[in-house]
Each structure stands twice: as C-alpha cells, then as structure tokens.
Image (cartoon, rainbow, N blue to C red):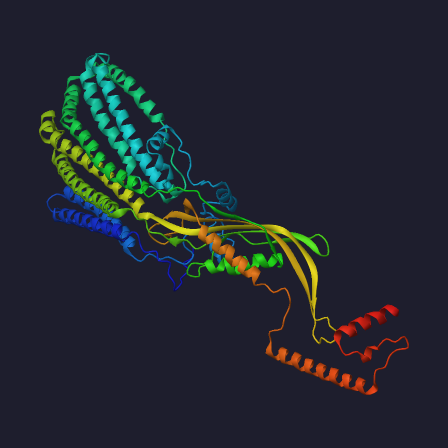
Length: 636
C-alpha cells in the first residue's frame, strides 16, 4: 500500500531496532572473518595456488554471508515508516476516502463483513482454529492456553515439541537396533551395524533440528501448521528392518572383496570409529535443550498475557420520536461515529450505510438500515515484564553468537581441507594405505567433526534468531467495533400554527413520527499483526485476539443519538434577524389597521343586521370575528 503521510503520527515505533543492532554486529564480525580468509589466501598465492584459491573461495562465501547479515541488520535499525492507513483493516474497507487503500489490501484482509457480524452476534472468535494432527492435539491438550496465541507462536511451539518427539523416536529406534544386534538377530556384523547406526542417529538428529532453522513466515499469522504422527511410525519400522537388511548386505559384499579393498574399507571404518558420534549426539541434545528452553519461556510468558474473551455490549430498545428515519442514520454516520475517530483518521467501514425506506401509502411506511465501523486501531504495547524483554534479547544475542562461532569453525575446517587438497595435489603417485592412514584419516576426521559442529550450532543459531524475531515482530492494537442495525415504521401528519384571522405569518409542517427499534453491538477489540522489515512493514493480515465489553462506549453512542433526537424541532421557525424585523413591521401595521377600524365603527354606531346580528366589519375581537365568519360561510 502507498505510504500515506500525516503530520499526526500513530505512535508506532520501530520494534526491530535492538534486534537489527544484534544482526548488524553479527554481520560485521562475519565480514571480518571472510576478509581475513581472503587476505590469507592472497598471501599464499606464491606458495600454494590450491590453498590460495580454496581460502579465497571460503572467504568470499563468508564475506557474502556477513554482508547479507549486515544489510538486513542495518535495514532493521532504520526508520520505521508508518502511514495513516496502517495497520490493515479486518475486512474490506468501504470508506469513500480509502478506496485506493482498500483495493490494495483486499487480498490480505483476514475476515469478511459477515464473519465479523457472526462473531459479534454469536459471541465467538473464529481466529482460533482447531489443532490438526496427533502432535498438535497433544501439545494443545497439555498447554490449553496455547490455542489463544497468534498462529506464528503456535507454529513455533508445535515445531519445537514435534522435533523433540522426533528426537525421542530416533533414540528409541537406536535402542531397538541395539537390541537386535545384541541378541544376534543381525548376524555376526551386529557390532558394526550398531556403531554405524549410531552415526546414522547423529545425522538424523542433525536433520531433525535443521528444520527448526527455517524462518516462520509472516503467512504463519493466518494458518496453523499440521503436526501428525506418520513419521514416527516410519522410523520405528525402519529400525526393525535396517539392521537385519544391512547385516545381510555386509555379509554378501564382504565375500566379493579382495584384500586391498578390505584394507581400504577397514581404514575408512577406523575413521568412522574415530568420529565422536556419541559426543556429538550429546552436544546436539544439550544445545537443543538450552535453545528450546529460551524459546519455550518466551512462549510461556506470552501465554500469561492471554485474555481470550468474546464479550459484546448490546443495546435493544424501542424509541418513539418525531424524526425522519433517514436523519437517524445520517446523524449516526456523520456525527456520532465521526466524533470517535482517533487522531482524525477515518473509521474503517465494513458495511456502508444504505438505509432503505418503503413508502406503503401516502402517509406511512417502513424503514431499515445497517452500519458496521471500526475505529482506527491504536497501538497497544504488550506488558510482559522486564524478564521477558531480557530473555528475548538474550535469545537474539545467543543466536548471533552461535552464528559467529559456526563461521569460525567453518573457516577452520576449510583451512584444513585446503591443506589436505594441497597434499593430494603434491602426491606424484597413488597414495598407499599407510600414507592415507598417516596423512589423511586424522585431517578428514577433524574436518567432518568441525563441519558437524559448525552445522549444528549454525542451525540452532538460526533457530534462536528466527524464534526471537517472532516475538519482536508482534504488534497489538486496540479498536472499537460498532454494528448498528435499526428497523421500524413511520407515519406523516400535518401541523399548522398561526391560523388566526389577524396573524400575518403562518407555519405549516409535515410531522414524521417514527417508531425506531435499534440493535447496537459494541466490542472493544484487541488485534495483532506481524511487522516486517522493509517497505511492507505493516501490510499484512490483522487478526482478532480478544473481544471485550464496552458499556461506556455503548452508553455514549446511545446518549449522542438521543441528544440529537431530543434537540429536533418539529415546527419551522425564523432565526434571521432581518426576517424577524420585517415580521415585526407587518404586525405593527396590522395593529394600526385594527385601531383605525375600531375608531370608524365607533363613529357609525352600533349597527345591527335585520336579524339583530353584528356584521363582520363591526367586530373588533378575534374570537367574535372567527365565529361570525363561520356563521356567514354556513349560511352561504
């Protein structure tokens, strides 16, 4: 959406400044490591071209990663541009002043007008979806308040628990394999299979937790992931089939190998045994426990602020007022709701006012109309305590430290790999088994272990960084959602004033008497959205987390409407000073004419008609003139 600048800001500051500073620092350190690797490679050009190019390539890769991290961190620390059309509306906005914005955000609104009406009428919140899958249901059964958190946090918690269940499943599979090997079901190769499966377990655990490194996209604010149990069954079946199949395959292959091949395989196997698989597995479990502890504390702290109420204040009455029905809706939209704007930002119109009047006859009919508006969402900071803030910062810092440490280990392992490549290049003939044993096995074991450790801490660093970002990105807002519906009937009658024979002014009015049955629902909403870094920082779906009663706002709306109805004037009057002066002059002339007529009649005497009654010209009072006129009109 376009950036709509206004001199009155909405009070939304950049939530990513601290996180961006941490990322910027991490990027600077990684850039320095990459620059040093390039410098080292350039300085070794004259000594070893292979080593030089290997280090230059490694340095270029690390430098690219560091520059990317610096760029994202710097972007996060810059100004957070918030236009007056932020955040996104809940449903399509029909406000005439926001047509362009409404068309641009039409694809990212989270609700429809009918959905919002159902939520108000039914006192329900359709934001919270039912967990799908065995794992998801298990998590939400143990932690029921998790259901009321935004979807990205629910997805984060589900991923963590699912990873631990997968970890437990793989450990169980290793125990099953150990049982099969110890009992002799795998044959003579049982010890080899057990050691080999330990290495498989290490790779499996690394793969399980590498999935946690994937960022939780902003689209996660709309959809909760499915967490099933299908993979668990597959792992258990594989742990039964794997050792028996592998044992049969080893016995089959061994019979076809010669002595040299067997020596080479033994050399490779010695290298596999030298890799500390057990130590690496314990390292994975330890760092996973620490990382998940930080993230799960943040999830728990967020659940303490949950208040998932679905309350609505409601008004149902019947008013008998002398007012045209259309004026009720006009006053509601143009005055009552307009007075509730926040910093003069137009309200979000989810149902445009279009009253319908049906004229059943010349002087009566029926009417109905509806309106739904939301006031401008006001930023509401989350009060989660200083400990939550400290743990969130610690989580982001821990992720950055792990990333830098992984970069150092990657540099160290590639340096050893470059040295090994230089040795292979310098060898004139094919190396013998003894040469490979003395010069290759130890460096390869070191490279594998360093790359494994670097991969493990890099994945957990990304996991902490992305997890902390979820809690930095959440922004909460508070707004008022009003749904007004009115039906009723109206009748018309005539009201006339100033009908005396001597009155110089007359007022004739058509009086509309309306029977109004309003149904007003008001709820104070707490909504949330997930901010992003860059241009489209707040242009994403906003979801409803809480619905609270708003009795004071409802009474205020009612009082404003009734004040308008009570202040209505049914009789037309004159407020212009010049017109009042003219009318006063006419009245003065009328009074002078009456005095002149009365004087003339007194000179003529008391004349009577043949039947003894007075004539119209001889009457001086208004009462006698009215009665005499009625009698004469009756005779004629």
